[in-house]
Length: 136
Picture 1 (cartoon, rainbow, N blue to C red):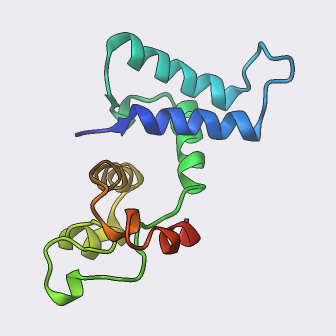
Picture 2 (cartoon, rainbow, N blue to C red):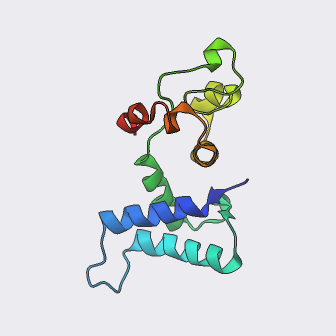
């Protein structure tokens, strides 16, 4: 799964729509327009992912600013990888992902977030959902 998923592009568009609403309801502010062009191209081509290296600087910058507004880590402070599990029961990340999280880039982190959200098997999504909500 290389690149940025279309749901992240959509979330970034909605973030910018809240931050910088259209003044007249017709003209999109620059960050929203840059991301909307990416989203439209992806939808037309029926692509679920876009390579971040192929984004225009304005779109990448808008996406990175949205990314900076999201929670950095899915951790809920219940780490079973420290007990020897290959996948953390608390957050759903693999041992490798937990260990290398600080070095991972934004796209790789969002790919991990997407996987654990789609799987929704970690305690952050059921048993400790209230605790996870407080952190995000």
